[in-house]
Structures are given as C-alpha cells and as structure tokens.
Length: 123
Image (cartoon, rainbow, N blue to C red; front, top):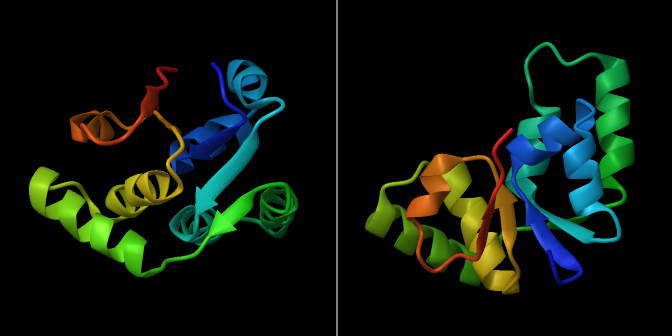
C-alpha cells in the first residue's frame, strides 16, 4: 500500500489493539488519522476498564484526531443522503474525503461510497 497517510476506521483500531499483526504491518510507518467519532467510540465503550482506557489514550497520542468542521459536516450530509449510511460511518468517510487520503475499514457499508478511496480489510 503506497502513501504515508491513512484514515483508520474504529473497527480497524479495535482489531489492531486486539493484536492483529497484519494490520500492524499495514499501518507501520504510516501517519494514522482518525475522526473524533472514532475517539468517542473507543473511549465511550460501556464496560471499558481503566487499563484499557489508558492503552487507548496512549495509542491515540500517536494518531492525528480530526475534529468536525463545516466541510466534514457537508460531506457527511451528502454521504448520508446519497448512501443511507449510519452517522458514525458517514462522518469517518467524510473525514477521509476532507483529508483526501485513503480510509482503511472492515465496514462493508463503506464500500457503497464511490467517492472514497477505501482499503477494505477482511479479518
């Protein structure tokens, strides 16, 4: 996979944090961007332990977290209207479009979005 920047979907980070070595190799030497929604999904998981929370926070310090802005909002609305994708996935895809970099995801729903440069990951 060429390029040094990538947006990682929440599912990808969950796999990575669970020890997925293939993903670790794919993401090695890449600057990982995540949507603020991914940060919220990871840290807002019900039943997360203090230790898991600390591991996630430490990992997120190595990522660039992209907050919502007017361009991402507009893209999110267009994606939701055109493809009927759930809000979190729409926001994450819109973040990829805003940054103009590929997104890696295991979410089949994102395959509908023709405008996104999707790297689909099958576990």
